[in-house]
Length: 127
Image (cartoon, rainbow, N blue to C red; front, side, top):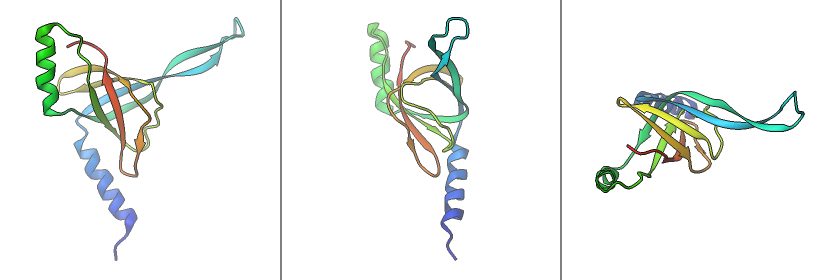
């Protein structure tokens, strides 16, 4: 008998095997400063754990051309996370994968599925 939950578990496990990096997602929350009584934004970690960063082959050629010309490097990528990773639009993301540490800004709201979360992110720094 086919069980949807069993299929979802198997698909989630398959996604998790593809995670070859780690990331830390930083977000901001409002907190009241006890000394001044004013509300301030404080940076906190929303998620830290396994991930996978996906970039296209065309991106590598454009990156090399821009690097040689001295341009600021900026590109979009997709970050894959477990489905329980709860993050919000506008977060800062640091990804360690393949021996590189890269900084990104989250470009939009995450797409949450039963097997994984997909987040469009934009590279911030220069290689």
